[in-house]
Length: 85
Image (cartoon, rainbow, N blue to C red; front, side, top):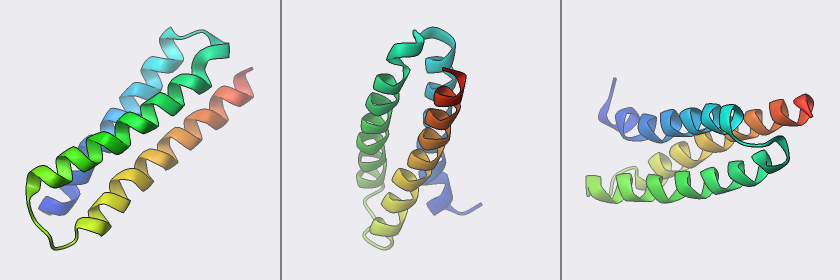
């Protein structure tokens, strides 16, 4: 596993953990709101992690991978929440 992938995985794991937490604890009518807040937090976390690495090479690709992965996870979460309503 390369360091580039290791810099992206924490955002994906946090997004998945937040999705499970949202599904387990929030009211059904508030879940979509929390998914949006979670995505905003994932974007901020991605930038914090990638800027902390201090490497210019592949910055855009790593950032796109972090945000894109979080988007896919949270879009699937939204689909599940929509089907459960």
